[in-house]
Length: 91
Image (cartoon, rainbow, N blue to C red; front, side, top):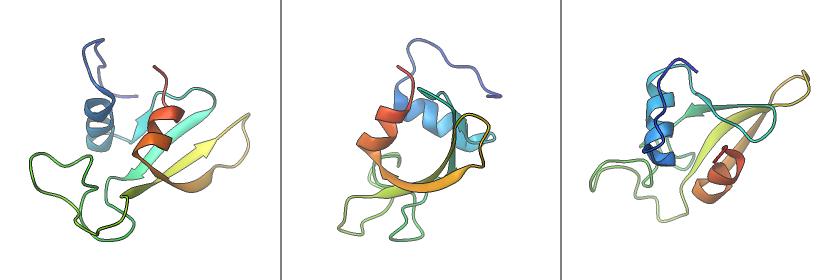
């Protein structure tokens, strides 16, 4: 990670900071990188990451694309929603 995380930062704030840098997030196990904050259903930022009323309005649960690698194996890409991403992140 190339950004500072404070204990006061929410997970949403940590994700926004990661998107401004290299996308690497603190992960429960292995390596987690958010590839884009854009909803996979549109070309807009996921509604749960947007500031204010901006962002995706696709009508579905917004999902983003992440890359996970564990135990030195090749990384795999997944599409996850907000709750799934939060579960993958360290507390």
